[in-house]
Amino acid sequence: MKMLEGKIIKAVGGFFYVSHNGKTIPAKVRKKLSYNNTELTVGDNIGFCFDEYKKTVIETLTKRKNILTRPSVANVDIAVIVIAPIPQPDFVLVDKIILNCYIQNIQPLLVINKCDILQDNFINSVKAEYNDAVSRVLTVSAETGYNLESLKEALQGKTSVFCGQSAVGKTSLLNHFTQKAQRTGEISQKSGRGKHTTRHSQIFEAEKDTYIVDTPGFSLLELDGIKSSQLNLYYSDMVELQSKCKYHMCTHTTEPDCFVKSCVADGSFNKNRYERYLAIFEELKEAEKNKF
Image (cartoon, rainbow, N blue to C red; front, side, top):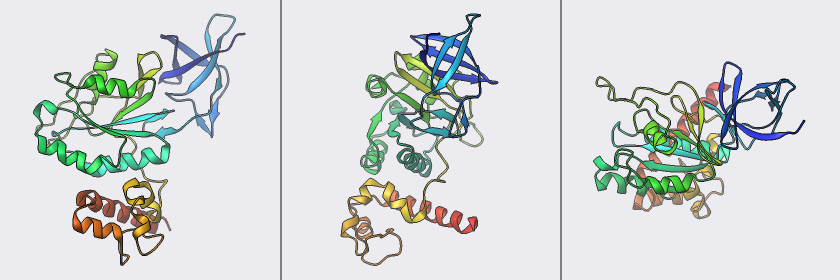
C-alpha cells in the first residue's frame, strides 16, 4: 500500500480528520500511535494509506517539533498573541505566553487588534514594552481589514496558534483568513471580560501548507518548564545586559550592583515589563517552595 503524508486538523471522540492536498479526509487509526507517550492530536503530521475497503488509515506519526497541552496541539511554528484596548489587556498573561514560546521553540508574534478604536499612545506603549521581546509587533483591525495582509504574510507556510484573552478578536481574525464562519465573542456587560466562544481545538487550512489553530480559552499559560533562577535567561533583552551585572548568575531581583536594575532606574529598560518579571519570579519561587 502506498503511504501518503497528511496533517491532523481535527480530532473528535477518537476520530480524526486529515488534511491532504487541499482535501479533508476522515480517518481511523489501525493501531495505537504515540510520541513520548502522548496520543495523536491536532497538528500531528502523519503517514496514512487506504485499506482494502478504501477507508483512510493512519499508520505512522512523524516526530514532533513541540506539543502544547492546553490546548492539545502539535508542531506549532508561530503563536499569534492577540491583544486589544477592550477588554483591558492582561500583560502578565502576554509575558507568560512569550516565555512558553521560547520553551517550546515557537516564534511569538504580538498582534494589536481593534486599531480602529485605538489611540496612538496605547500602540506606542505596547511597542515600547515588547519590540525587543517578540519577533514582531503588528497593528491590525479585524473590523476594517487594516494591515491584515501583513499578518497573512507572516503566517505564510506556517502552523500558527491564536491565543490571548477572550473577545480580543481571535475568531474574527481567523475568519478573515479561513472563511470559516464561527461565533465571535462578546464582552460581558457585568464583568467587562470576554465570553468564550470556541469549544474545541481545530486547525483551519488558510491555504496550502498554511494552518491556523483556533483554541478554546487561554493557552500557553503554565510555566512548569522554568525555574525561578533561570527566568532571566528567557528575557533576551536582559541577557544582553547580563555581562554588566556584578554577579555572573544575577537574577536581577535582590542582588547588589545589578545593571538591569540600574537600567530600570534610568528608564532604558521598561519599568512595567521589569515589574511583571519580578511578579513572575516570585510566583515561580512560591511554586518551588510548595513543591517540596
